[in-house]
Amino acid sequence: MRVLQIAFLVFVQPNGIVYISLVVMFVALMVPVVFVWGAGVTGLWVVKLQYIMGGIAVGLFEGTFLSVISALGKNTKTFVIMGAPLGFFVNNTILGTLQQWGMPVITYYIYNAACLPIAMWIFHVKHPKEVAKAKGKGCAVFVNSIRKCGEWVPAMLTWFIAKFIGNFVLEDGFPLLFNTFNTAKVPLLGGPDSTEHLVPFAYYAAWYWFPMMAAGDTISRRVPNCLELTKKDEETGEETANWTKIYGYLALAIAMCIGGEALDFLLIALITGLAAFISNFGNGLIYGLSAKFIDTSIAEEHRYAAYNLWCFIGDLGGYAGQGALSVALAEKACAGKHYSFVCHLDDN
Image 1 (cartoon, rainbow, N blue to C red):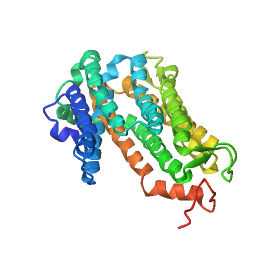
Image 2 (image 1 turned 60 degrees about the vertical axis):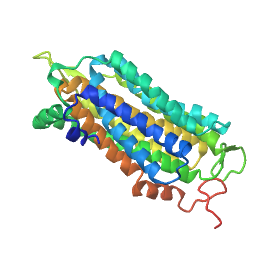
Image 3 (image 1 turned 135 degrees about the horizontal axis):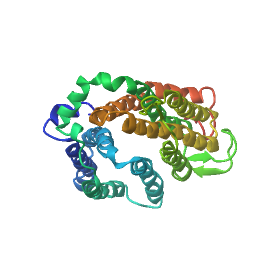
């Protein structure tokens, strides 16, 4: 949907795409409320319908939204992009805890659906005016940028690679967590063979792993505000990309992604939370650096296409992070190491 949106939104400007995505997500959230809890439907088609609509909404929203708000300035933009991991924290830690205390599952859907009209109102009131060169229907803006791809695609190649790696690590963290700590209890202290200091997995995830993940992803998105990605040409005085610094920052971010995820293989509960922080700090740093680069070094008329293709490459990384390779990595982490509460093998 990142790219296919241009095929059927030929009559809609980028701002309109944001509104449509929010409406589609609202409908997606209401699908289980109406069909499962309301009508008692238990068919798997309801899940498929919800995921299809949710995927469409996310595909339409992220890249378009980032391009539309690029004119807000780096401080505002930074706080906006911190919203995603914070929302993740609310759902997995706050609501996750309340669920353990008896909150009905339907509350997740009602709460998130209720947030969307508020989000739509905020966007309507606060979104910046369209840039003259980027103004037009979604299809026209995208096609114009593709025709002039030589002006911006070469500069984005490095960021595409980094986005793929960041999203792979982000998504692969979940299969690793659930396939290694695969019992109802987690040995919080000690090694993987420990049978003491046990805590329920639900509380371990909600109170430790997810907060560490959200903290890493949130804090790191603010860091690029303190980093310079450009240099001034001594002859012309123009600001140009400082690729030496960019490669250095991205190398650090990728190293954190890979190094953080590697710590999961130690199968130690406390270290796994630290691994989530480090790997997602790297992912968030890639996200923040990419957004800053696009907003400062890519022409305004091409940001819509740049953001959407960048997100699309990230989707490919996320898909790989939950595909066959992620299963193989989870199996590798537990290979020959099976304990009572970690990498547990069923007696059956």
